[in-house]
Image (cartoon, one colour):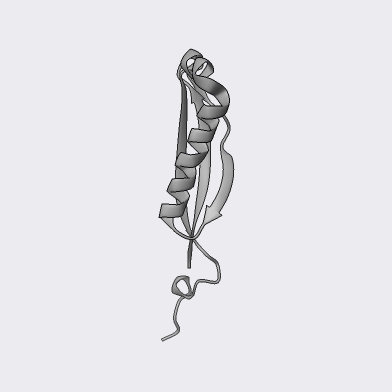
Length: 80
């Protein structure tokens, strides 16, 4: 089975830098992970407000990295 890990970076175009990675959660599908990334981004913008987002030119980047679970049988070598 596969898991997708959502990692978010909040960046400022004015400062030219991004936050340290924030590990938000794990999901069983890429779709759920990506959707959560967009929802998280929207929440950050809504909390910051237009004035702050425009002032700092805030951008939110996220990744959904795929990782096979350790107990996944497809990762184990088969004896021949």
